Length: 525
Image (tube, rainbow, N blue to C red; front, top):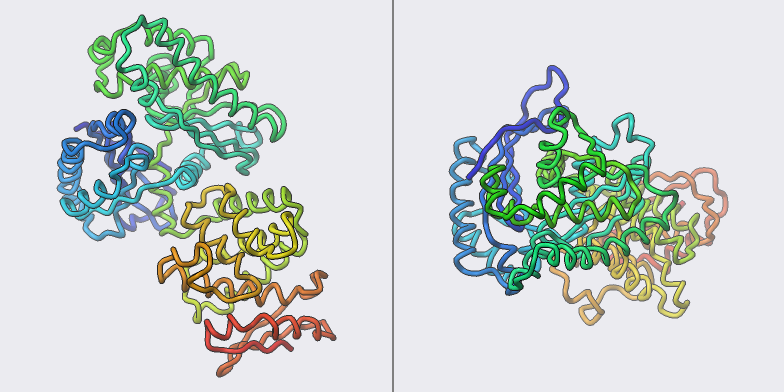
């Protein structure tokens, strides 16, 4: 098990430590832990990092399941981490976040894996889907992209993992594109593991496999605007390359490697046997085994994007997880903005009435805030409500009849940046119930929700119905409102609008779910 200390996001002078926290990343070839402290100003600092090699990806990408011996290796690694956590006084579950990515996510016995870890160590493992990884990556890299020479640039952020490759395109702090490809360094290596062939032939096969994904990615990126100006690469493989090629820059936040020098280094790594890489560069065997495929993947992306240099970031998934913990699980303003931008783009694709959608989202937010003591939901559900409001009419693109059901289907099968499948399912259900019948167990998708999720859908959908009724005229004429709860009524007062008869009729028709959910009626005056 290796350990080291490294700074993360710098602290402001005079800030006092608030609490010690830890994050654990169960990856394809290793389990890594970062112990940090969160300060009162929202800054974080990494105190210690630990890493231990495991063979999860080798199991998953060859057999589709994690072997029992490998699971027990993970148990031993996490048990030793548990001892370190205890020495730091990190005992309560709220101070620890443990996640797993593609190697566990794709394993057929992933539930048995997380259950065994919990039974043996008491550590709850959250298996992240692709969208959640994108969200955490954005949280980690965003401070770096705000630096002066990248603030206005269009940056392509690439991270090659053992099982997948993630691509983010960020321009002026806005995520313009996000996609995860089923392409990883260990996956590439395992594909050729049973074949005996010369190194040149191995590289040729890898380049052909990589080329298909790179071509697809470059085509998708090229449709969103002008050519990207910078490629920013995450991952330990490229940090290793930077340490060898530009050692004088490794202390900088974004060391820069000329593409020609990077290409020569890739050639060298492919010629060297894995054993020599381990011996000469003091890497672990799993890291040495996946080094050349990872670097080749980055080189292929850089060529495809037409860049002349590669910028290397020292940010990793654990930095983003620490940032997320610093916000205490509340979705940050930056992330919320990205999600809403993504919803706007989807709405435009389906030709929604954008003014109406945005206004209903605004009114939904006002009502959510006014009813905090009634719904008792966290702020992230305010965002989900506004997303459902922005997209509640996209089903009209398919047809008028039953369009609320079409909206549900389209949302569930869309990509909203950073939203997990669970979050997306909730947004879709809220949009589905913005009109017509109340939720029923026989309805598609609703029966599969947990009781907690069903309650959340009812609370949010009933607020959305009120907000939608307040703009039944599609004129956005209700700009302000105040809410007051008296006895068994929610009284909504609208200044400056004389005739509210249309909205009053709309609310009378649509408030049944609200009354059933909250036990109060709605009065508009």
